[in-house]
Structure formats: structure tokens, C-alpha cells
Length: 439
Image (cartoon, rainbow, N blue to C red; front, side, top):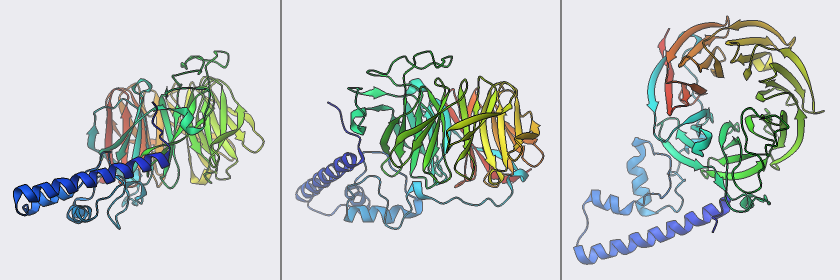
């Protein structure tokens, strides 16, 4: 028997469970009155009257604990995801502007997270959540509250595709999470699934694949932060890796490693509406403010492409050093940062001319990169030397660095807490404060 994960079914089950829990508590209270013959002490009454959720939920602020408990004891809540009246939900928090420019501050480690993690990537919602996609054979994505740094949900990649209107794959199917792209409001995260396991998926994905390898198409799952569950699934190309949204949020772009293509997905319908042909192993993708021009790197072809999304055409604008991997846009699209993991360099590119204007060697095999909110600093993981580097963007100089565990591979900046999160493949996440200490 399969269990539907559609949002309306999830909510219905939570309501039923909540009602049953209230009935059990009521019966228990009645028995305690008959057998105990008196009123329980205040602390026991609070414990008896507060119903704990069956699923993970955001921890309440300590200052609100008493108010929250009193409200729950009077009116038990059927939904484990709802917060006390007037309290902001953890996926709706607002970014906090840093007191100092990021190119004047030092990285200070404030946490080291382990436990059920093999993180391939970590991405900030910008509104209070982080999602870490664990190594593909772990089959999970872990969601964190970026303020408390506690795990609030562990998402299994096992789904019944029929629940999402997708036929031809009977029974349960498993994915393999890689990267994530959050919507601007922090409500949804799109997660690419490297390959699928189950019925009728074709050849299993592998890194050395080509368009002739017969690797089957894979899928992207959408995570709903309010429901803490997958709520949408749609098909893209073979071995989807990186993904990003256009600034207007209407289109999702997905780089398909084995197909050597870029999927163009309409976010309203959740359907692939176009496919752009590229070269071997496309990965990093960014979209210009015009919503119609994208840059994509083909990692094994050592090329940078400019894509016209309106026409579906693509042209090579640069031959790069070995294995271009990651892209970041800054200065309202005027500046493009390109990381070459084989060339040990980050290029600073003027998008008006598509020419390199500066570059830096941050460390051995730089991979993922993130920008500070004020765009004055870049943060990069150096995969082959177990470190991260901080680069001042004005002159492309390394201004700080820190050791981390072996194989750091994912990194992102959380603007709610002004912290940098670093995912290390072996099973850990480092958290660095970016504002407390000046250089």
C-alpha cells in the first residue's frame, strides 16, 4: 500500500491525528481526576495539557515558551507546523543587514554539525531555512533552522510518482538529491535528483556518461517549506545537477549532465517547456536580470555558454581552463564570477564584453562559491585542501581562510544570521559567523 504525499492528504492526516490526540489527552485527564482526586501541580498540568507534535517542527523562541504552552493547553493545535499566534514561522524570517562590510570581517567558526549527514550541497532559503542534500546513496535531504541550527525535517527521496500525476513507474521510486534552488520568498526549494531507482527508468546515471549512454531521464522534486514535504515532481533530462530560477520566478533552468542539455521549466505548470542543446557535462547556471539571458558552463568541454531563452539558442563565449563548475552574478548582472575546479581559479568577467578582467587562485580545486549579500566578498570551498577561502571582490585577493573537514563541496550564505555554511562530503557542516570579528 502506498501513502499519498499530496499536500491536501498530508493536512488531512495531521488533522485526524490531532483530533485523536486531543481525545486521548481528554480521557487521560478525566482518569487522573477520578483516581488522583485533585489538581496536578502547575508544572505537571502544563506537561499534561501540552500536546507534542508527531513530526518535526521549528523550535519556539525561549522567550515565547510559556505563552506557547498556555495557548496549546487551552486550544490544542491539529497542525504540527503552525506556530503561536503572531509568531513568525521559520520559513518566513527576514534577512538582517550586516553591521560591517563583508570584505572587512574575518570568518569565525560558531558550529560544527554532524549526525545523519553526508552533505553534497547546502543552500539557504534566505528566510530562515537551510537544505542540505546528502550524498546520493543516502537518499535524504536535511532541513535546518538556520537560527537554532537544529534539524527540523529529514526528507526521504522515496515517492510514488502516481501521486504527482506521473504514470509509467508503478510502485515506489527513489531519487538521489544533488542541488537545490529556493524561490525568493523562501516557500519552495527545487531539488535535482541525479538518477531514479524503480520501475522503467532506463540506465542508471553515472558521472562519465554521454548522450549515447542510454541513461534515463530523471526528475526534480519541489519542497514546500510550510508543509515540510515534497509537493511537486516533474521530469527533466538525464542526470540533472545544478538548477536556478529566473529573477521573475517564472522559469526554472536545470543543467542535465548526461544529456548535455539545459531544461527550461515553467514553474506555474511544473512542466518542461524547452530544451537547449549544449556540450559535455553542463553544470553551473545563472540568469541575467532580463530573465531571458543565461550563462551556463559545460564542465567537460571547458566552455562558457550564453543562452537566449526566448529563442532557445546557445553560443560559446569563452574557452576556459579545465573543468569550469560554478557561476555567480553580481552588480545587477554586470559581473560574472566563474570557478574552474581544474584550473584552480576564479575568473571575474565583464558581461558587457564577456572578457576576464581579473582572477584569483583561492586554493586547490575550488568548487562551489557564494557571495555575501553586499557582494563585497566571495566564499569558496577548496575541495582538495580541506579549506575555504574568502575573496575580496574589488581586487580579487584572498583575505581570509579556514580549515574544514576533507572534501568540502557545498557552501552558501544565510542572510538571516549572516553566517556561512560549508558542507563536507564526509559527514559534517561547518557554520562560520561573518560579522563578529574584524580583520
